[in-house]
Image (tube, rainbow, N blue to C red; front, side):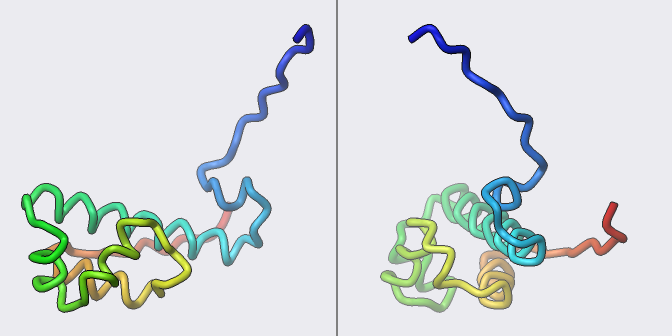
Length: 98
């Protein structure tokens, strides 16, 4: 392999870099950030998936979907609700696009 690899600097949104439309890329990034925050909160609390599901008011299979990053199964609204149930405060910042 003698060819040099070409490196492309990405943006701050991997979904945009993958070719999603801007609106969808932003939504996917927000949902991903919330999913990770919820997972970290559960891990930090030392809860099993069963105990965490009970605390969040969902079934264990639903929580398993979250852990498996099945983002298509969670709306932004549902993730905000789960984050609040996990004891997290969700804030949103809106600014004009560059």
